Image (cartoon, rainbow, N blue to C red; front, side, top):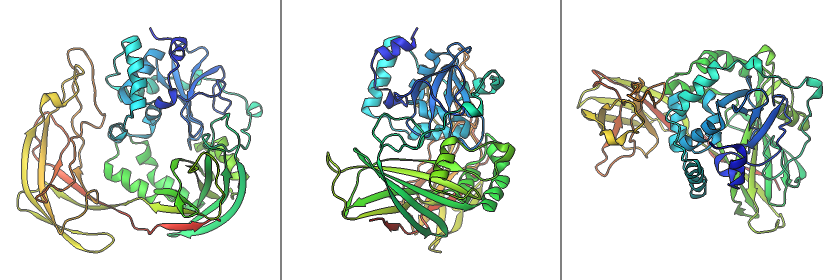
Length: 481
């Protein structure tokens, strides 16, 4: 049986699986008393720990969450914790489970690429203890968290909490303690408006390894309150539709679907990562802001009458040493925005649908070419002792004029069927059902294909939701130096 001592004796690179080294004490307002930290996620103060009195149970502590609980169990034993990591590749993906319905979380797992170094760590864990990946990681974690009594945890009294010192390092992000040298703060005080949103670049930090830049997005408190009230029920629902999820993200006044780049002396700096935390006004009984978010707000003198998104972007120096800085420009690249479109209820071959591009206003005609019932081969599904649904509806269609891949999304409005328990009692799958692969890129003959969720019996009818994903803003260039 794997033990913590045996695990660390392997001297594996834990950062590859979301377990970076750091303080073993935690020290945050929501770190339980008696906690022994196993590792750090590397952003937002997230750390994983044992808690005295709870045996081998592994907990995750998430200080930057907008609302409690900040501490949740992840695994009954350290062995199970490693099996969960083997199933998804990283502890950081497990931490996201409370924030996602199963389909959305499953998409995140599928899209997370496993690098060569990461795979080497996973292989070493699997081979050392002959462990098998956890068959149903989402269901395992959800069941454990729902059954856990949070009242068994104790926390420091407010007066004994150690407020995090203001220290910005290249790899520390907002909240994680770091042994790296602090960067030298250079006050910027840059303000700008981008597509109606008010932004600030208060400071940048010159670190030995690279450049750190902080950005602040401000939103009116009334807007934040209205948004939270409107979407509260959806956020509590574990099975919101994809359309609702995307619409919720699009309407968030503190949403910043943006990629931050930096150009130093006219050349692009290598991007090393970004992180963000929220500060919400008038949280009242709904929770409290994290100590890290409060520290950022106070340090940059941000009003407590507004809502804030704080972003931190890091960039490596182009060489081994910090170069001379003649000019520095930040470039904000917008990500595509969600626009809901019409729905096709049980379409038939030859049927057409008129689509109006939400930005250009151009008319596109979607023509259904064929609707077929197909059965996915059994060897295409996981072998976990469960009976998987395999029936799906396939729709082939064309667009005229055509659109680039990724602009138009076509997907089933209903979730697929859940897998049934097999002879070994195992269940693998999403609580929202099984989703088939959606192929949106046009083939050589301009034919496109969309596939419904997987079901045990062929569906009598399928309703398809159409939506656009289009960038509506131009890039914003912000001269800093």
